[in-house]
Length: 268
Image 1: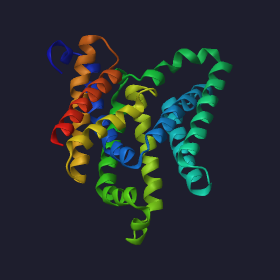
Image 2: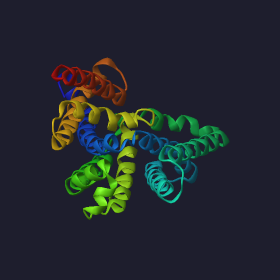
Image 3: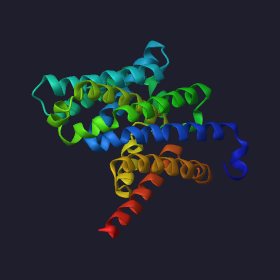
Image 4: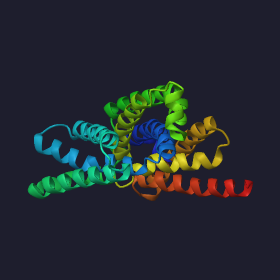
């Protein structure tokens, strides 16, 4: 952290959390872009609304209930897509409507919860402690290991599911694993940027990486690089401008995407 900001412990912890969460989001964001799962991640992020409300009402750490609801919603959407005739976007829309309605109902019934929901609506990396940093480090490791093992198989599945099956890819298992890990990553993105911008933490760096990349492997690494640059630039900028950390990081990601779009256009 440059200048006087480096003297604050909470800013240092926020910086560590940012550089752990951002690449995990980018690693899974590649799958979001490849599988067109932006709406899916939106539904999972909105489940944080209901999950936090349930946790606060039950006296449970809301971070645990947010993660539980995210995993539950992710599994429910994948199952509904596989076992019903409803299109994917319809299943996602129904799930999103349900969790948002549940959250609003619970918060309205207990008006005192409204002030406690601010963190989940807007996110705040500055509140990250050692526990959150430890979990973020584990999540990053799991995301990278999963990507190393599953990236090629998921890439084939995104192009042609029948071809993937013919090649012996257990596409159903990989799809469930990807959805559940994505749900957990989205929950961490909610902590960083709030449920309104959680999906942007995944989609925007991956979209920028796709513009810069010329190979499938490059797509992954450019996405991770874009997320890291946005985080490293966004955190001190948010401290200097007195703006929300997550929103500032996303703004830098969007600016980087704009630059990547121009770069891709000039190469055509």
